[in-house]
Each structure stands twice: as C-alpha cells, then as structure tokens.
Length: 252
Ligand code: URA
Image (tube, rainbow, N blue to C red; front, top):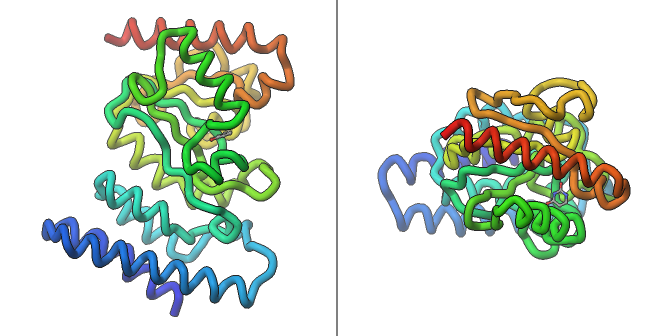
C-alpha cells in the first residue's frame, strides 16, 4: 500500500515534467510533502528502530525514473525519499551544493550532525578544512565546485553508510553527476571511492592515479574528517589536490 503510493509519487513527478505542467509539479510537491508527513508519523508510531539494512522494494523502479529527472524533480525526490531507513532519523536530506555546471565535483560520504541541521554538505569542522584545502588550490565552493555525498541522509551516530544505503542513494548521485557533467570527480575517502570505483582496494592504493567513473576522470584522496584526526596525512591530501588540478588542466 505504502509502496504503491511512493511509486505513484515518483511517476507523477516524471509525468508532470514530460507534459511541462509547472503547476502540476507544485501539486505533486505538496502531495509529496503531505504524504511524507503522514508516513513519518505512521512509521514513527509502529517502528522504534530505523530499518537501515534492506533495499527498498521500490529502489529498482526509482533507478529507472530518476535518470530522466531535471534538477527540481531530483531535489524534490531526494527531499522526500524513503528508499532506505536513513530517512527515519534525518532532520532533512542534504542534496548537494555548488555550481550546477562545475568543473570539479567533490563527493564525500554522508551528512553529519551539522549538515543534517543546515541542509548543506560539509559545513562542520571537516567542511571548514575542505574549504581551506579547496581555497589553497584556487577553488571556491559554489563557483568552480559542486559538493555532494554518497548518501543524502545522516547515518545515525555518523556511522559509515551500509552498502545497501549507498545503493539506494546511487541513482541520485549518478543523476547529479550526469547533470553537472564535471570535468573531474574527487572521491573524498574510502566510502566514496568504494561506491564510485566498485572496489574494496585501500585508499592508499587508489591515490595518485587517474581512475574513471563512467568516462569522467576521477581521483581519490583522504576524507577531511580523517585528516582532522591524522595531521601527517594532510600533506598527502595536498599532493592529491595538486595532482587533481594537473589532471583537470591537462584534460582541457
Ligand atoms: N562528511 C561527509 O562525508 N559529508 C558531509 O557532508 C559532512 C561530513
């Protein structure tokens, strides 16, 4: 029953776009909002613990609909997403931030408490470090860069997202990549590298090389939160960013 409703919502969004129904989109957005509120209350009353380990039965259907969405539809779909258990404890989904045609795309793991609160990726301590690292190579958030995460909702206690959670969110990140068409992707940390390169190889072994994600050059570096705990690795992250900048320049 709940699955049917979610499916209907996703289809409504796509149909509204196909027919250019601007007002219909508003109606769908309102419908999604009401539905989410209703279902959040419904879920909260029957389930104390979030279910975070199983892929939602609608995930494969969503992965067929999401690839044709525009930015507004994608943002709205992410905002109301319930494809994995992370939706149950989030304050809000954290979509991504930056220039929608940015040459640089930085991909982290998932929102923490600050991001969950403010609705923007990398706004906490790790985010401040990321911003200063970017500034050091002449990149400004919102100008040359877009910043997104593997999962859009905060994992409880800031744990690593499960592979199922990353898989449920994958169509959203993939669509963001398709819409942005970055010239270079930087995977920040193991979770992003594993998700995008489909490998369990260590971060150290993945650094310093150009990989590809669906044809787009991709480099791997340490996650800023890890750098906060391991200061000596900061120099390596700096090397990675200088390497990434060279890769981007040479691809011009
Ligand atoms: N860590 C991440 O991976 N992403 C954020 O948005 C914040 C912290």
